[in-house]
Image (cartoon, rainbow over all chains, first blue to last red; front, side):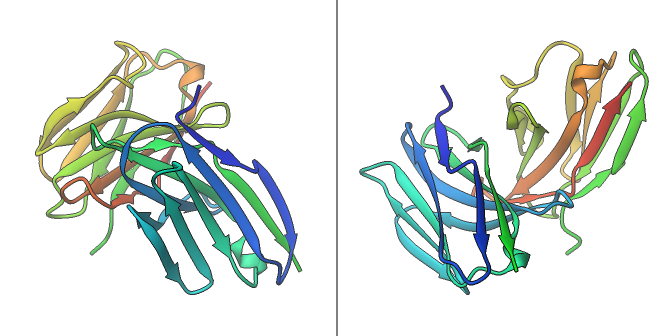
Length: 109
Length: 112
């Protein structure tokens, strides 16, 4: 069983919709990352969280350490947000990320 | 800063050939990671180094894979002999003190 589970696997939304992607994990962590991978393949780190909430533009990430759960929200979604969003956790015991399988988001005009 | 640099960006080779992937981390970073991404398994850690020393290679699939970091600015991942199931995108990432990781553009490997 994967230590990091994401839902949904695939998501289609219309431009302007509010989007939520969820991530649950089963190990103790020191940090959680949200990554974005565009169709060209490059991976960009959006957020690194260890508690609470972070906001960057239209993106908001939250984490609940007790419930071992994180969410990534996109407000006023736009077609350029279409990408794969990957949740990754940094376990307490090491420096290597454990990855979820990713959520493929398509925002249509 | 140029970011993490990987070469080649694309590699097509025949089964049985040796493949060498290269990575230049961000200057000053002390951690370097090699990951592999496939459709079936997503992103997986292969190996990581701290201050040029391999720390965790438990993700290296088998003896056909080897990785080296001869100095702080260069690492290689070698597959010998290559097999079709090694076809994947291989990412290198670096970080400072193991915190936020910066990913390279990846090397897309196809083994025929």
